[in-house]
Amino acid sequence: MGKFWSFLFLLVPVFGVGLFVWAPFNHHWLPRDVSTHGHQIDHLFNFILGLTGVVFIVTEMLLFWFLWRYDGKTNKSPVKFTHGSHNLEIVWTILPAATLLFIAIYQMNAWADVKMHKPDMLPTVEVTARQFEWRLRYPGKDGKIGTEDDLFHVNELHVPVDEMTLVKLDSADVLHDFFLPHMRIKQDAVPGTSIPVWFKPTQSGEYDLVCAELCGWGHYKMKGRLFVESRSDYERFLAELEKTQTATNVEKKAEAEE
Ligand SMILES: [Cu+2]
Image 1 (cartoon, rainbow, N blue to C red):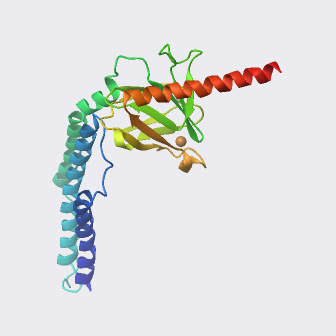
Image 2: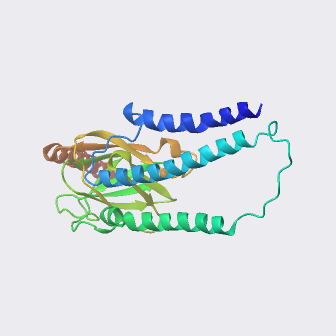
Image 3: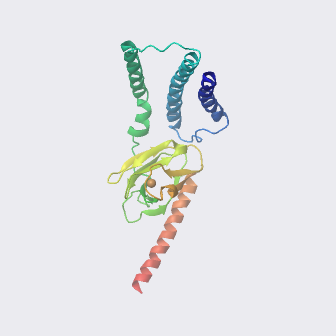
């Protein structure tokens, strides 16, 4: 029976590793990367996956070997108690610590590019997360957010392709998480503070914008769309937004005067 269990447990690493090898070839893997910095994130992801993968395979093989070798049926003599090994403990404490330190240093450039080297520009759009939608505010003709001519929109974030987008990220209520999987962007939105987020999309298209923080009962429906479009389409979108907004303002004014 012991041999049976050994083989059964061996299936875990075999299928586990098999799945990880099969998935990328069949596109069941990371979403397409369409940002300039995405490859750095993907590289880090794959690097850490490879590293932990090796450790996983080694420990699973050891587990299998112990199950196989020390099967109760074939080892009749009672096991001897061992007090453990100080040397081994020192090795398996220092090794992971050194590995973590190495990863911390290795990823510094990626972190700096994505989170520290903020582009020198005015925000393209202000994104305010609230239960359960994304409130968007674009600057009007003056290029500044927070003035009379600001343009408002909900859930459909439009940005120009091949241009740096700087988002001013806020939250109106609880913790949310601004997640653009295709841009490899994930940033918490924290109430009471504005956080800059930047990315440069390289391909036009329609992509996901979702909340990656469990923010309440309606978290599941807090999804928007990201439209990456040419400069002219982007300007057309803003012009259209301005037109409808002015029309509603005029209507409201007329109603108020009546
Ligand atoms: Cu949320």
